[in-house]
Length: 168
Image (cartoon, rainbow, N blue to C red):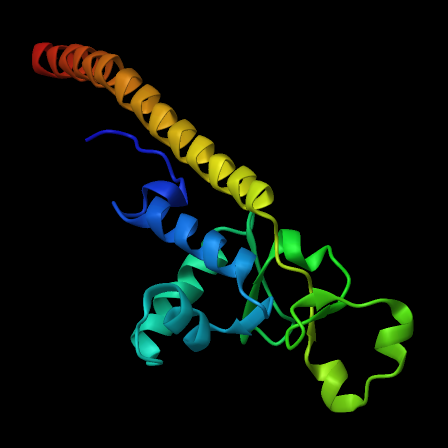
């Protein structure tokens, strides 16, 4: 038995791909925050069912370095986008000036979002995810490397203890 890393990047073979896909879609989609069902549909084209939603909710929860849940726990967003102000008009697909925002009615204000990330910003997040995944793999290798001598030492100690018990 070997000691393994507890990194969520090693949860399954598809985890890094899921994180990268979520970063791309959540970074560029007009609305910055959606329900898990809607993100499942946007990211992977899945029907808005509970299975797809629960999969993406797990990914979002297990990677707080990139994703955040709202206070009700029903919607997710990309952390970087949350740092931007809500001045992006999803209808006009542009950032609005304060004077333009002040003229909007309630319906118009509900159609404001946080600005999408640039391609460069999305690329930075993807590279960060790849680096974190690579570190998790390296850490896992270090744990396996140490487990062989540790189990060997344990065998020697157990053998000595058995020898002492048998000679009594």
